[in-house]
Length: 85
Image (cartoon, rainbow, N blue to C red):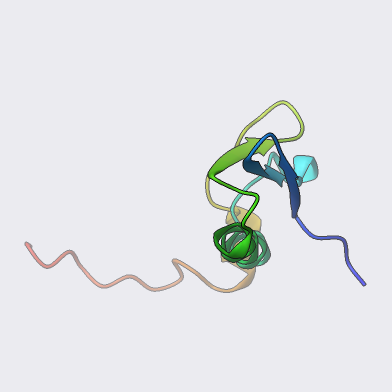
């Protein structure tokens, strides 16, 4: 089983969601989004959590979209012109 990219911990009345993918500077991938959604659902159901704190490991909170994943999935391969043109 693969380790989650978002760790969950409750302390002091808060649910701490820690983005833990420093190898790609915590870039947003489909897997990270799935793990983050699961963490938020868990926090919503957790009676001990009155707040949610989103934090990270590594030196970068989030580098933005995971461009390697997007390229591998063919994102941006074909683009339609902007509707205002």
